[in-house]
Image (cartoon, rainbow over all chains, first blue to last red; front, side, top):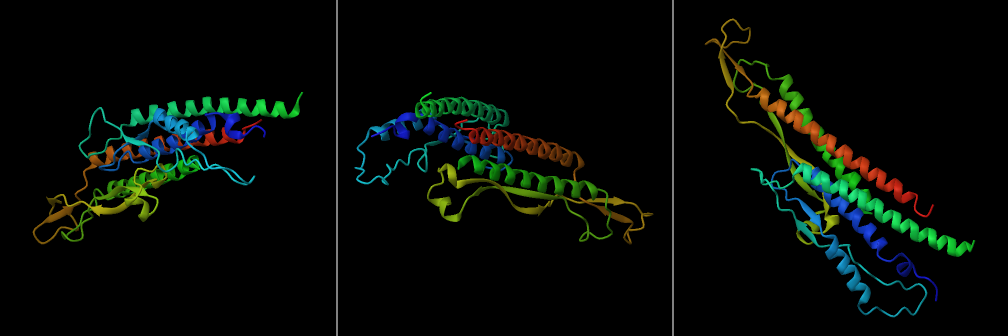
Length: 133
Length: 144
């Protein structure tokens, strides 16, 4: 018995992982801004979160030893990545639009900060519960 | 950790853009380098970019995986096959027996555009790296 991290932290740790993975995908788009035939990609937050919820409701393996951890490979590997549809397709087949990617990257950084603040609040709550003062 | 790979990705893009800037500098520096024979003339050089994947096996299997993408690479540097400039300058010390001198096929306007594009792309990747740095620094304060 006790408070498990996955119960205490809720969705925020998955969300933080998703945000950092999306940062890498968007950084990759910006890195390939001048690569011919490169197709810009992005990740869908809602789909990823739905997958996270789904896997938490499915049947779990029995933990018969304190060292057993539940394996949840969500957001890693089979993360649903999508291709971006460009507003103005370019002649070299590249679908990266700098301003769009830049805006998404900034948005993602802010959402990362928000998620981080929530997660930090959870940890602060746990700390004060342990301290009891 | 995905945030760590942002540094690799942005770093690879900065390397690629600096290669591009290097070739541009070389092209502009040699734009007026005359030669007396068609074989010795300097030809404009251009890098060819390609998307990079972390390893050969991940290319075919999980191309859509976030972790299999790893930035940009310079596949090679090709010499331009645009026509050379042949000018009639009989008093030029390098003129051939007919009085012709060959100039490189470097288009200065094109090179200036390349230069601006490369420096802008470089700048963008510096910003990406900076924001990743802030995110990592923020994570390090977790629980404080």
